[in-house]
Length: 264
Ligand code: PEP
Ligand code: MN
Image 1 (cartoon, helix red, strand yellow):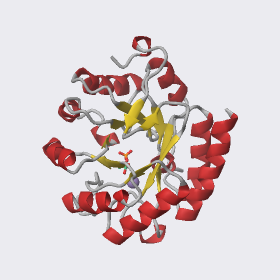
Image 2 (cartoon, rainbow, N blue to C red):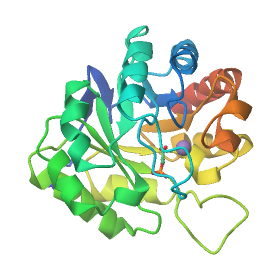
Image 3 (cartoon, helix red, strand yellow):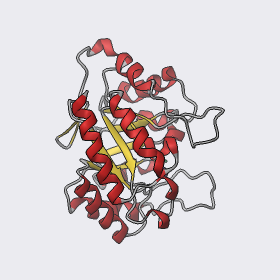
């Protein structure tokens, strides 16, 4: 279903009227995790001011340590929706557990994010395949392109074809940065599938100073959008503080991305 030859012209995923996969590059900005109502309000203001078209933020966090902050859960969804509504921003948030799917639907989450660690959680993929909601499918930590395409096929097979691929860096021998952003995946996926492809430069590099270069490269390589972490006060972030842009840095980056998008 996701193979390019089924829709050679490419398909557009519609997120509350915002086209992902069309001529426009869509930028999704926001914090790694939902922390407080004030943090989310400030984040929403910054995301809107920078000109992003959607907002991200995790209420359920897949943390390496079980003792690290795990997310606010349903309270986080409440803070997120309240903040995003101030600017009519569609809400993008990660679903980790199939038991929370009804809650995500009840809270009117606009885009369900399937995180890297769940790319091959096949039961979760089957369930999001049964709902009529756009899904961002992140690439697994060490997933091949073929495995990633098959993961999308699990979702599509249930009837939900609103799938957006998200390259977020893969694990290699290199330890100088968090992950290796696989730029090659962009043209390869665009050839293999008709679905949109976005890039997360934040989890790829793992450092805020790397984000502009990776984001610019992704847009130049044909990405349909970007998922970027931004925090009103990065050094105070509860999660992924090192890679969060400030509101000002996000705004500056948006200007250069627009210029690159127009040039290609
Ligand atoms: C995230 O986007 O917050 C996240 C946890 O990303 P990934 O699943 O790519 O590690
Ligand atoms: Mn994060």
